[in-house]
Image (cartoon, rainbow, N blue to C red; front, side, top):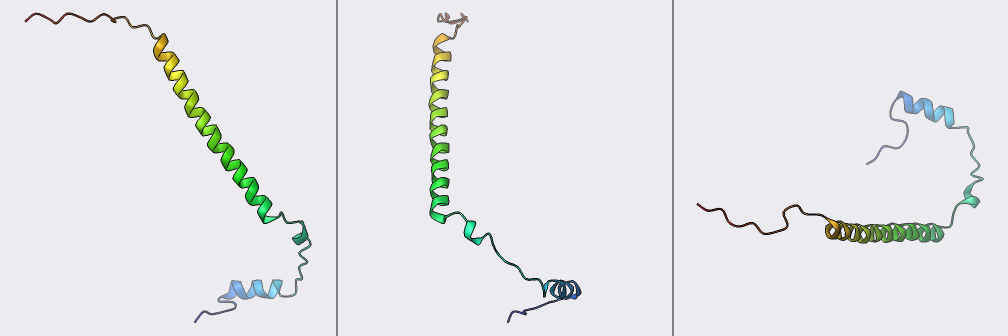
Length: 83
C-alpha cells in the first residue's frame, strides 16, 4: 500500500509552506488544441522526411557527376607482367 503525504522533514516543510497557497490556472484557456498540435508535428515530420529524401537524391546526383567527370591517369588496361 502506498504512503500518501510527507515522508520526511523536507516534505513536511514543503507541505506546510504550500498548504495555504491558492493557484488560479488562468492559462488553461490559452492551451493549444491537441489536434492542431498533432497536425503541426505531422507536418514537421513530413517536411523532415522530404528533406532527407531530397538530400539523398542530391547526393546520388553529385556522386554521378563526380564519377563521370573524374580523370583517371591509368585508364588504359595494363599488360600483364612477364614472369
